[in-house]
Length: 169
Image 1 (cartoon, helix red, strand yellow):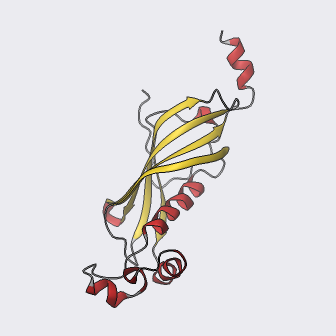
Image 2 (cartoon, one colour; image 1 turned 180 degrees about the horizontal axis):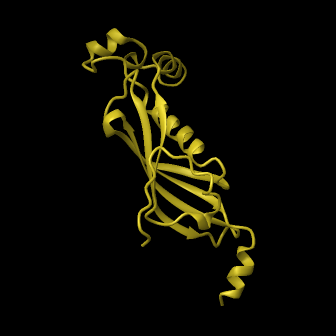
Image 3 (tube, helix red, strand yellow; image 1 turned 180 degrees about the vertical axis):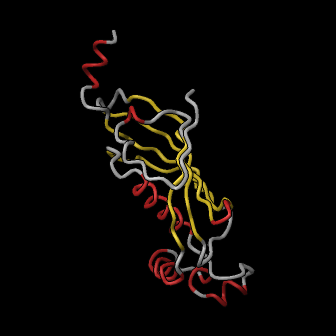
C-alpha cells in the first residue's frame, strides 16, 4: 500500500489519469458556505420537509434551526470533488453507496471534503479505463464530520498504456 498523501484545501490539476491515483492517497479540499436561501430553494424542489423549509418548524421539531436536505449535502460534495479534480479524465460514476447523514447541516456552516482512494483496479470489461473506489467525508468548520458516502469513478488510462502493458510482459 502506498503512503498516504494529504493536502489541505487543495485543487489537484495534476491528477488526470487512472495511473495518477493510488490506494491510500488522501485528498482534502473544498470550501462551501451553506446559504439559507439555497437550502430552501433546494428543499422546495426536491425535499419539501418542514424542517428544510421553515425555521420555526425545524426548531419545533428539535433541530435547533433550519437544516439542509441530505441530498443537497451530497450534491455539494459532488461539486467540490469536481472542482478539486478539474482535469481528471473521469468517464462516469456507476453510483454512490453507504450515504450517511451523521449531523444536521445549518445555514452558515462551512463544508469541506476528505477523500481517500480505497480501491483502484483496471477494468477488463472497459479497456482503456480503470475503476477507483472513494471513501468520502463531508465536514463542517472545526472538522466535525456531518456526512459520509462511498463513490466509484471510471477514469481513463494514460495515453500509451497499452504499449507500456505489452512491454512489461
